[in-house]
Each structure stands twice: as structure tokens, then as C-alpha cells.
Length: 385
Image (tube, rainbow, N blue to C red; front, side, top):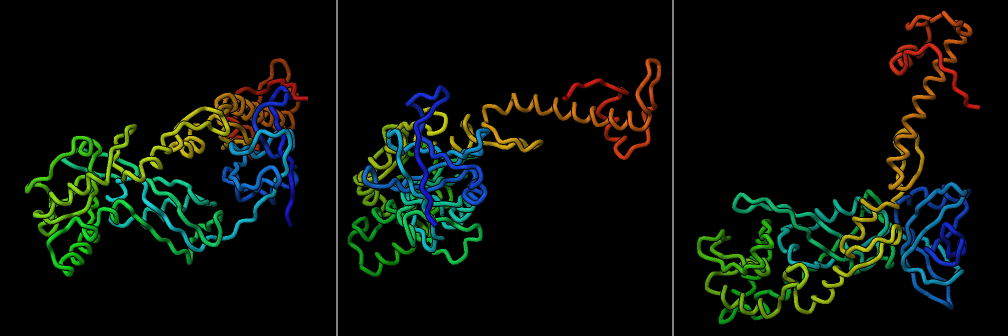
């Protein structure tokens, strides 16, 4: 059954400007967002104003008995109807490499499967990052291999089970295919030699990551560099090429690749505009701070002040920015409550304390050892009511 909800413009002063939100009654929260808290919920904007499907984020429950879903892509209309999308389970995912660091992973499928365990929903054109650790000349570096979801089955928005059974995962790396020896990097050789070289180069991609400093300096490979079966690794694309064909390969490789003017990463020329979009500044839909699109997911799920968290002690749901003030209040409330219970037990067991009477510290009660560790005072007159 499909439900429709209004999208309202709101802010703390009740004026007609501010963030967009979808208000959902708290009575429907458990069935609607029980498995999606702090995860994306997909909504369809109803025609005629818009017909896009956009992701949203659950930020509830709130103290005003409604659940609200904020979304950075909603248009600025005062009211708008939306339709919740019932997602199908994913059966097939096709990824595509977005930077040269992906060439350093010999088997990228296993890291991708590990990253997917942190997701419950996926959509086409979503970016995923994989940390790649490397060590060269006793210098340890960590870089990020970035991939994008190019295709999903059975639809462009899906949910993924944590078991991830019967999911077909495909992976394309244009950095390897566009610099393949078969495409003209190997010349004056037989077809059989070309095919064997291509297969060997693909299978022997190094698991080591070249640091970005090496990319910037465009270090020339020498005979002393680490090699596989007499082959030398191209420092531009990561392929292993025969020594006598390295110059031909690198001359062609330089024609196809370029440096990102922002981060100096090596990328394909025809992918430069797509790569540059990762550095564009976007506004966080929750706290309205601007940060790079590449870091948006990490910001929303990490340092964002408007990230919804739950107190480990009392279970109270709040924004991350309120955590410090809540903790001091929560700790004091717990101590006060323990003292109150302790005093009730003392009064019940020993009666009202007189001016000169002090009951023993080890009074006989089921919780005496716990309560005594919190407070040694025999009685405190708290006015709770």
C-alpha cells in the first residue's frame, strides 16, 4: 500500500523559508523506518511538478511526535506530495573505477563486498570509497580507491541484504581497458604475443599503491624497480609492461591521462569532468555546511552536527551537537535517581531519619552494594514532584 505525505517548508520560527521535510506521524515510524534509521529512504516526487526519485535521510523521532525526512534535492515549493518507494532486493551490481588507485587492487571484489556490508540501500551513480594501504621505501600511505555504481538490477534504487546472497557483482576499470596493450601500446608483435601480454598484465596488477608524490613527480621506471616476470610497472596507469615496450606504452598512456588540477590525481582525460565533480562543494542537507561531494557521505555519517545519535545510557535520541550537554544532564540525573532510590530503601527499612540518627552504611537491601558505591549520604531531601 502506498502512502502519500506532504512536504512542508519549516524552520524554528515558523516562517516560510528553511529546510524541506516530509513529516510522518510517529505511530507509523516503527513500520516505516525501523530498519532504515540513519539510512536513505527513497521518495518519488509526484507529477506534474516533478517526476524524479531522490534519496532522503531519516532524522527522527522528534519530540513533537512526528518523524521528519530531510532531503537536499527537494524543490523549494511550500507543499508537495511525495510517494514512498518500495525497494526491491538487489540481484546485480556493476561498478566502475573512478580513479587510478583502483588499479592497485589486485582483487577489488572482496573490498567492495566488505564496504557493501555498511549499506542497506543503493542507487545508481552512488560513490563508494575503499581505503588502500601501501608501503614503499619504509613509507606507509593510505589512499582511497573510488568507484561508482553504474548499473543495478532489478531497478535503479534497491535495498541490499546483509547476507548478500546470490548477488552478481561486475566491475569495469576504464583505466586498464583504455591503456590495454591490445589497443596499440604494443606494436610490431604477433597477435598471440599481444593476447598473452594483455592477459599477463591484467592478472599481475600490483597490490602495492604508488604514492601520489610519485605520480606528481612522474618518476621514470628503471631496471632496478620491482618487476614481475621481467616486466616493469607503468607509474601512470599501474599496468605491468615489458621493458622493451615501456616507452611506447608510456607515450600512449600520457596522451590518454591527465592530472586533476585540484588533487593532482591521474585520471583519464575523458573522465576528468566526471572526476572534477567529486571536488564540487555541496551543502550538507542536515547542517548546511559546505563540503566536497566526495566527502559528503563521510561527513553526514560522521562529524555532522545534525547527525541523529542515541544516548548509550538512557536511549534518548538527539542531534550530535547536543551530545555534550545531554551527557552532563544524563549523568547527573542517573546519580540523582540512584540516590533517590537509596533513600527510599533507607526510609522504608529504618524509618524517617532523626536529627542525630545515621543508619549503617551496610544496610540490608538487595541493592545496598551498588547504592553505597554511588553515595554514602544517609538521606537527601529531593523534591521530584
